[in-house]
Image 1 (cartoon, rainbow, N blue to C red):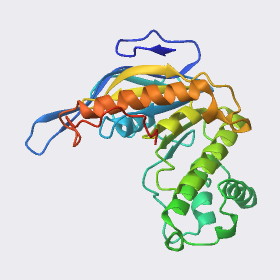
Image 2: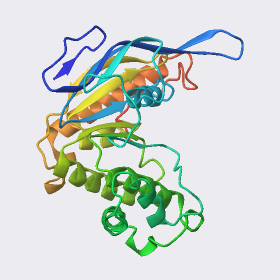
Image 3: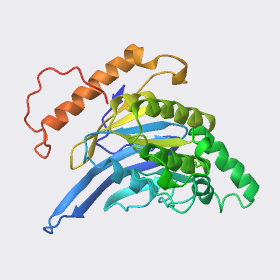
Image 4: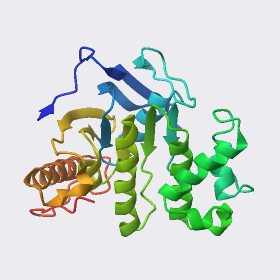
Length: 287
């Protein structure tokens, strides 16, 4: 099931994040106004996992930053729990860049995010060690960022956000720098952690497979100016790590549909480096 999200939507019961008529533009070097997002309408209900999927440059990260309150819309409104969003301890954000403190260890970086929430240093260390273990870095708890690979640094950033146990978790391609095997393991671990608390998760990705595996709903965005083309219900049972979800007919169907749609968007976009190219019939890679 999919819905056209191009028009305003009536607020739904249990909607924690409400985005109505949101647009965002920036000034180019020439002084010309560049529209990054145009008339975005979206509802995210409590206890759900939403993936935002689309071609590069369609405004996925900008939208995520606006949900967090880091960037303000130029038109429209965003409400989180009925109020304009503000960055804070109940809103966890995992950035594409690691943003680690170089003079703190892995444990120190995770503990730093907990100072206000957990005054007791023993409890703070226990919580930090718990999430460091969940991302598979217990052996490196006393290592410094300079001693870690890029993928390990990203796992530290993920542990830091998860350790705060926020009500809303915003993730901007957190697994993009991981190798294929670690990426799949971390997808499962993220789902396990999310299922324990059922907080709201909004996850930006370029990977079709990742979006289907993780999400309850997939928000498909089109090229700049970024707009929501449709919102698709994934419809696969949970927990998804207990069976071969990629072999399910619904997974295969969604994978083919989404890949073909994104492929068509990229090849028909004059701003794309691949505009107008003929690749023939595609089976899709999904990654």
